Every structure is written in structure tokens, then in C-alpha cells.
Image (cartoon, rainbow, N blue to C red; front, side, top):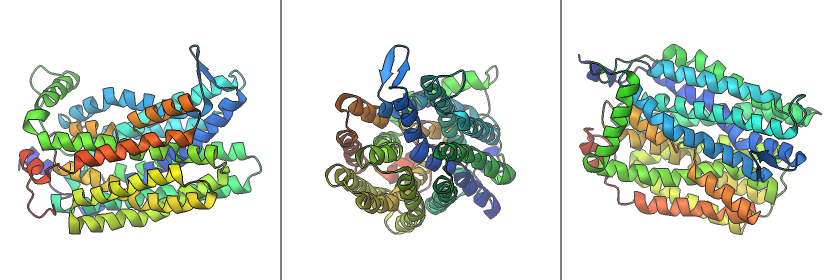
Length: 450
């Protein structure tokens, strides 16, 4: 059996379950740190300092965290495709997954020490340090996901990927939701809310580290290298050359894959912006207390578990692309409703249920559909491009949102910028020919619902 064939042999059930558990492990970072606590926490410290000053520029408190998200992803734009290309030429995919998960988990744990009074650091310095730790953690989060997603074609046959991907996302919602429930209890019961928030941030890092080494580290099997490193080349030099080659040929050899990737980058930026700024919007516009924000995200986590499984089932009937189109129509309506109708806390929970139903499904199916339309032996590299706009790592959307807040001073007006990403992404997605994309990429569409 060739290395290439072996690399694509589906894994056993134990390996698939271990793969799914990485979503369980890292989702704690997305829910507790990115979506719920860190943005409002850093903004509150920034307000006590009268804003965030860095190299002579003053950030509005509510604009600092979205800016950090964007910086972390700009770094990913430079790094992740290169890492993916290196992984395709080496046997380092599992080792790189574990290395970046470790770096991200440790940086997250260190957020425990960020507070307004830090001895040698002023409140302004504390916010800047917190932003730096977040950038390291979010960069590592994105890098680890590249290699995690790169395992999907290894462990699941083409016809099974929608269901396997959806179940992985569902496990992520359960894991992230369980830790968030613990954090909600801690913040509610502890008198020192600041300490409770810092303990919650650190717990996300410990959760990420612990379950990564308990499950995927023990069950994922390292496959042989997908491609042989040419004589005289290093992983770095060949990785750079491979990216240049891919950028040159994707338009001519894989035009439908390119169309899908562009559509995904746009509509997923809208999704990621909602994830990043949802609690910031609720805290600023609705004056929602900390407990209500965590309860909202907790509600979304557990409803999204069912939503991810539902959309996985829907894809077996309608196909992944049609199911994603349906989800984007709902996303557009949600963004409009947030701007025009959302003024009460109870309305926030109603809208949160709608978000939860489409959240996991749209992202899980986007991942599985992408795995069908990328060339074999180049999966990790292509997932490097994909991850540039994956969950919690959007870069265009948060920049638009942060700029709108900076200019208007209103998060409600800024939410209008999100609608554009859903609508344009939908317009670009509809004409994509999935069957042609699969055939062009050397994948067999037989048995896959299109």
C-alpha cells in the first residue's frame, strides 16, 4: 500500500471519537475566553484607565479587543498556510497540533494574572499584556485547528464527513457549555467577581490542555507524509514554494474551490464577528450584567448541540451546500433583527436560540464541504488558508466592526456592517458547482449528497 493510500484510509471509531474530543477540549477557549468574558473584562479595565494607549494611539475601550482579534488573524494569514504546507511534506501533523494546543492553553492560563492593579504594570499595561496573551492564544488556537481539520480526510470517508464533522462540532458545544456552566456558578456564588472571571479564564486553558492530552494525543495516529520532500529542500523552503505554486494554480486548476473559499471567507467573517462581539453588544446596548451574558452563551452552547446534529442530518437529505445556504438566510435575518428589534434582555435570549440553531450547522458543514473540494495530498495546506477565517479568528469583520464603533461610538450601528458579509457570501456561494469542484480536485462524488 502506498503512503498516499494509507494516509487516506479511514480511521477506526476510537480514533474518530478522539478526534471529536479535541473540539470538546478547545471549545472552552472559544466560549469562555473569546465569546463571553475576555472582551468585556479587558474593556472594563480599559475604562478604569481612561482608554488604552499604545504607541501614542488611544483605543476606545470597546474597540481594543476586536482589534486584538484582527491582529492575531493577520499573523495567521502569514503563518498558517505555511504550517499546513510543511505538514503535508512531513509526519509532524500530530506533533504540531499538540505543540500549538499547549502554547495556546498556557497563554490562556496566564490570563489569570491580568487585573487593573498588577504591581509594576499600570491598568493600561495590564490591558496591553492581556491583549498580547490573547493574541498568542488565538494564534495558537488557529494553528492547532489547521492540523486538527487536516485529520478529517484521514479518519472519515467522503460520504461520512458531514456527519463526523457535525458530531465534532456538537461535542465542542457540549464541552464548552459544561465548563461555561461551571464558570456561571462560580461568578454567581463568589463575592469577588473579578477573581471569579480570572479563574474562569484560567480554567479554559486548563480544560484545553487536559482534554487534549487525555484524548486526541492518545488516539490520533500519525500518517506517513503525503508528499516526499524534494532533494536539497528544507520543510520551510519547500513550504514557501508550495504556497507560491498553489496560489498560482488554484484559479486555473480548481476554480470552483476558489469560488467556494472566497464565499466562505466572507460569510464566515460575519459569523465570527457575531461570536466575538455578541456579548460586547449586549453589555453596551442592553446593559446586560455578567451573569446574563454567560447564561446567554450557555443557552447557545446547548441549543447549538442539537442545531449541529440537525444540520448534519439535513445535509444527508439536501446536501451540504443547500443546507449552508439555508443557514445563511437565517443568519442575515438574525443580524437585521439585532439592529432593528433588540432592546430587551428577553429578546436577547430569543435571538440567541436562533443563533444557536444555525451556528454549529453552518460551520460544521462548511468544514466538511471544504474537505471534499480540495486536492488530495494538499489538505493541511488548504486548511491553512481555510483557517484564516475559521471560528473565533475572523479578521475583516472585527476590523469593520471596531472601525464602526470608533467612528460612531455605537455598537448598534456597527452591527449593520455584519449583514454585508452574510449577503455577499450567500451571493457568491449559490453559483458554486460542488460536483465539478470535487472532480477537479481528484475526489470521487459517488455517494455524496450534492
